[in-house]
Image (cartoon, rainbow, N blue to C red):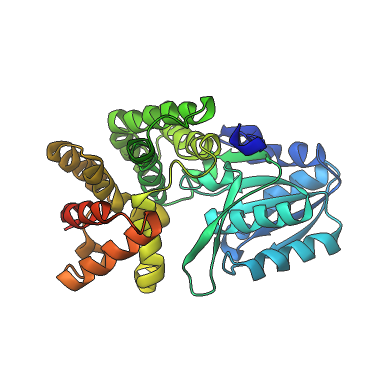
Length: 360
């Protein structure tokens, strides 16, 4: 299967509950005696007191690196070299998607095991076995698969819910919702002849999370805002992080990446100031109506999705994020998205251009 490559499902262990960071010592000590901890200064300030205590109690020495560089090859190599010099047996990546991707890249380059500690509910990267590399100009360079899975993911809801803005919770929902229509897009274009059990399973899980969001996510968002500790919030966090990461892994990273994510790539490349102001999932979410339109979904369903996204404060128009809607801009967006998807398909170009209307 998959050209004789192993199918990696994500993480050896997934811990998600209030106070889960208490387990960091036990998890790290099962992998080695020295940890290399990577995070940005803000995140490390939130977690290091507890993390340091728990690691010391478990007999695990550690080095800490505050790093806020870009997810580019130079950063991957820099952190990997520091891990080698430190003699660490395990890397602990703490924070959001960018930091965790850098930690996973270093883990891959050094063949050192990794534990991820996401600090928001918008971090399926903590579970996925791929990491995204960017070019020095901020555009997306591509996804790369690790040679080993994440050893453990620790999702402490005291951090993810109680100490993180609701915006991140909503961003995670929007990013995850894109998986289902994007997989559908690939199936429409390529058919089912090359489907395998793992890609079929990815389709089923993506559909489940999509339906679950439509049924429960608005109430979960309200509970998150009010800091209510409830099963509803816990279920949506699990969908955002574990199940969405699982979809990426089952589909080997390609089935879930299509027009909505390629719109995000376009923003990264063409509108860097906009990218700095908005979260990954917010921009992907803005591309969902485009994806649904190209898929041939009825207009009323697309408008319902836009209404849902707006209800959790995810932007639903280009003007909201500061991108012009003049004809020249729409043509440039169309060309970028087409080139990132299938540059020779002129019929697809027409469909993309026509369905940009759902982003106006």
